[in-house]
Length: 68
Image (cartoon, rainbow, N blue to C red; front, side, top):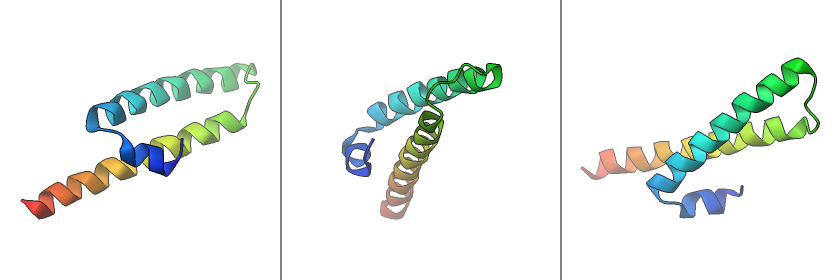
């Protein structure tokens, strides 16, 4: 997921994407613990995507607070 794509999302889309990514991260954590994880790089990608989404949410919240 590219930063441009994340910034184009609405708040609801961001929340949905964040929830899906956290669920996938949870599943991958169990796969890694049991030794069944095939694509180890995917875990890092998910972490970065979660961070991107949270960063955009924080930026939007701080802009709203400054605007009020």
